[in-house]
Length: 214
Image 1 (cartoon, rainbow, N blue to C red):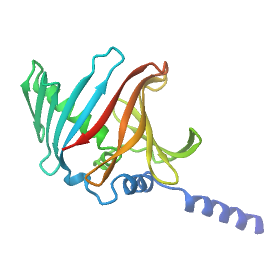
Image 2 (image 1 turned 90 degrees about the horizontal axis):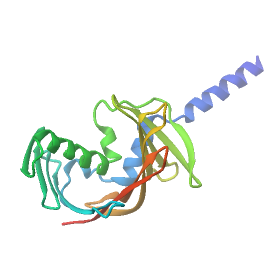
Image 3 (image 1 turned 180 degrees about the vertical axis):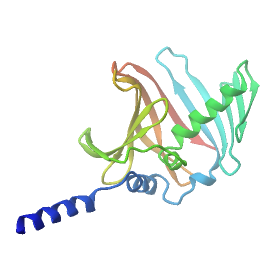
C-alpha cells in the first residue's frame, strides 16, 4: 500500500510540474512583449536582407496591426500593399496573391512568438526539452498542414533562440533559422538577426537584419 501511495505521489508531482504549450508561450511573450504591444503595433520597420550571391536588398515595411494593414517596399522594385486579406501590387509584375504571401511572411516571422497566439495554432500538446549551445530549452512543436515547426525557448527567461521547419520531416528536409541579438521596437524585444540554413545540409541561405524603425 505504501508503495502505491508513493507511486501516486510521484506521478502527481511530475504531472503537476509538466508545462503546457500555452504556459511556455506565455513566458516567451512575457519576455518579448511584456506590455502586450504587438496587437497595436503601428510603425515602420527597416530591413537589410543579405544573400551569399551578393544580391542584397533593403526592405521597408509599414505595419499597422490595429487595421490589419501592411505595405512592403523591396528595393523600390517590388511594392505591395495589403489591407485585411486584400492585396495590391503597386510596383512590379507580381500578382495580388504574391502581395498577401509577402505580408504573411513578414507578419509571421517578425511577429514571433506572439503570432503563435493566433486562433487555431496546431500545437503538439507535449512540450519537449533540448539543450541548445549549453542552454536548456523548451521546444514547442506546431504541425501545420504543409509543414512542421519547432520553436526553441530558453527555459529560464523565455527568450526565443531559434526555430526550424520541415517540409518533409521524415527526410529531414527543411530550414533552420538561427536568431542573434535583439532590438527594442515600441517596447517589444524582437530578434534582430535571422540567419537561414537548409536542413539537413546546413547550407547558408542568407541573413535578414532588422536595422531599426521610424
